[in-house]
Length: 305
Image: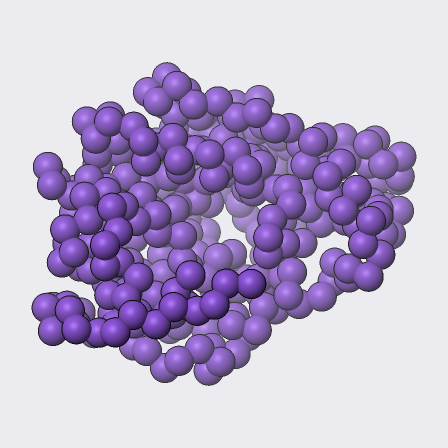
């Protein structure tokens, strides 16, 4: 593992040298987290993407996968949306993903194949756990507080287990270039488009707890139902895990680890230290210049646990 800052071309040089492909996941993720410092968000989410592309080209890396989000669809009522639908972002986060997609797709060519994967809302256990995602927080509250709270309920969300999302990236990376070059794919499954109230009812039922309904949040206008046919038909990919699977694994984890506080800031993107205090990171500002002079940058590898 090489620890670094995606905004630093020197760090990218260390990481990319000798690579055969790049999966670009690095970003400030989430509507609230992106509003903490919009300037840092733009440099991290968009300008750094330009640096990633420049470094890929310099090291002649032939394949780049960019991690985007279905949040780019924004407020879209009850329409079933596909990769060609009009984008209606309602947050800074979504806008940075749209702009980064454009940069990546424009860079696509015969010797540098780029693709964008728009992920549905993730759920399930992960190495750095998040309890600010809708399924995860509902399951956590069901276990720890014996209640599930729904705000509004009529709005749609597409969902996908984090392990299925990871497998989709592997699938796209291994696909022939002619199938994925310059393409956008929604990542999820049609049967996991769910209204928030139905989702709350299902999770409350799993854990046998009450469901509480509150007025919709004025700060969250997202409402989108997404088609995942292209991923299934074009690449033959199908998800394997369900909301019930993800909810139960979170429940089992929390029951096995009573010391875990799902309110702790380490599990919340908008409270995660790097989000609330960008000064914690090295002060790298993107300088969109050639990486030719960085070939002699020494490799510094962090120790893995």
